[in-house]
Image 1 (tube, rainbow, N blue to C red):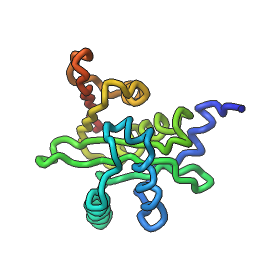
Image 2: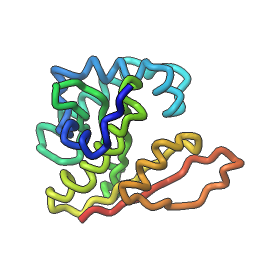
Image 3: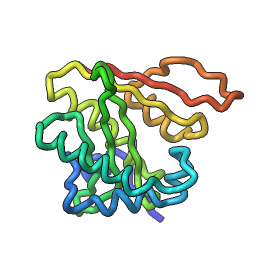
Length: 173
């Protein structure tokens, strides 16, 4: 297997608001994969009402043309490889960022490139102050590395012996 250098892959990856008509079924499929469920701490796939709630939220966000929405990670060839979700807290002072990459595309740098592009190119272009917050499972080392690479700072130092999640923050101007 020949590995493409990460810098060459950057031009292959596109981040854009999710196209629900084309890729919603792919989102549902990702959340049925055992590797993904384990990484996000679920023992079973979410139920249909979970997906319906999120689809309706995304539709509202897209109608209001806000940058705080769900983005798809697409390869130049049009292949859906994952998504990045931005969800505001109730008071909207913080935005939770979460992401998932399809298992067929994990460990190839796509998540790292996608989150970095969102945080360094797309969100700064909105000219808004955005406070991103993430919470990662202590076992999810790959995501911890992605967040650190993208400039997120650990909010607190958990006692890893207690299996605590790790909180990260990043402010974008």
